[in-house]
Amino acid sequence: MRWLWFCAGWLMVALGVIGALLPVMPTTIFLIMAVGCFARSSPRFERMLLEHPRYGRSLREWREQGAVSRKGKLFAGCGMALGFAMFCWGARPSWPLLLGVGLFFIASAAFVLSRPSPRPLDPPPPPAAD
Image 1 (cartoon, rainbow, N blue to C red):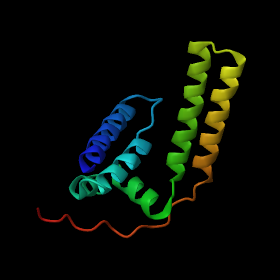
Image 2: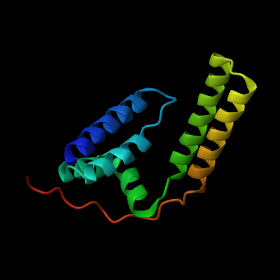
Image 3: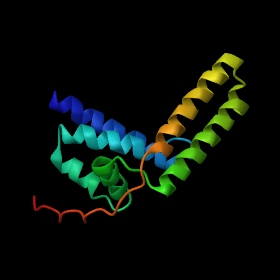
Image 4: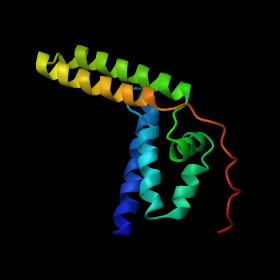
């Protein structure tokens, strides 16, 4: 079972990398899921993500506080709005589909916006010698 969590972790990392390159696909949510997978399979890779210079802070804030920064909320909201606009323009969906996707985005945005803002974190632990 451990190897399944490990493979799922790397799949989530791959999706997170794709999200970092594409403006309408999220990054952090996939990295949050990757941390969860690695927590069950590889403490080494879990630690690497939690100590990452760019994403580590956000991942630790989510894990410890369930918090999303103002900047994260702004980017998530704008990304969802842009994604919905591109969906409307590109797919020309039927009204029921448009309504369903719109409600999904509204619920997702409400969840992200309802998360608390982070309190100051303790500094990350020093890297462990392998």
